[in-house]
Structure formats: structure tokens, C-alpha cells
Length: 173
Image (cartoon, rainbow, N blue to C red; front, side, top):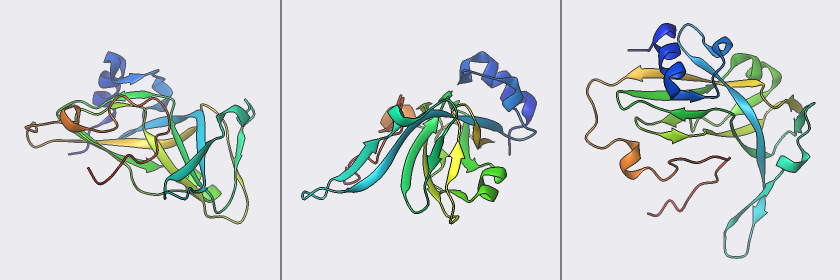
């Protein structure tokens, strides 16, 4: 079952979301704001290692232009602590989609996950999209688990406690 607003607000005010702004609560989700941190994919090294360039120093208070055709990693301003009895789906706000921005649907936060959430963003429109630090970009929708898992994300999660846009870790392990 989807978790309603009053339960999300109770969770958030009890340390589930830091920093927390009550204006981010929706009937069945909570808005997540952009931290202002961003990396862009720029190529691949000879050893097949993907190269990400940190663009964060270029982000100004008035915003940063995301250009068409490039893959970006950004993350939430909020540090999220998913309860063990919930799981969550990360989705792009529809207003962002209408600007031509796309989230590449790698948006699942497991029961027990703690950290900022990395977003995989791409501009599909033929024009650039301006995002401003602390702008509402994503929504987190929570579902209640039928029962508690034997091992939540804290037991084996590879991105636990991340605090920046994090590229994929070795997927062979």
C-alpha cells in the first residue's frame, strides 16, 4: 500500500529526511530537491573505466544548464533514511518532464537505505534545461512492506550512506 501524507510527514519530522521542508509533502509522496551537485559523463578511458567530470564548481545560485544528449548524475539535497518496513520508488516530477528532462528510471530505494539519492538525468528536448539548487525535481513514493525483510539494505547495500552523486560501482560483485 502507498504511504499517505500524514505518515510521510511523521517519518520526515522524526529524522527520516534531513533537511525537511513541510512544503515538500504531497498526498502520496515527498518532493526531493536538487543538492546542486552534478557530474557529467565525458567518456571512457583505455581500461574501459567510465569517466565522470564533477561540474559542481560551475553550479551557480541562479542555476546550471543541463544540455541535451548528455548523461548527468545529480543527487537529492535531502539525506533519506528509508524505514525497514517501507520501500520506495523515485520518480521525476511531471513538471520536469514537461521541460524535456528525463530520469532514467533507476529509482528504487530499498528498505533500510540511508543516504542522498543519485538521479540519472538526461535532457531529451532539443533545448537545455535550467535547474536551480534546492529546486524540487524528484518525488519519492513509499510502499509498505508485507513484512520486514530478513536483510534490509543496510546489511548489503553498496551505496549506503552516500552523500554525493555516485557512479555505478563494480557490478560484477
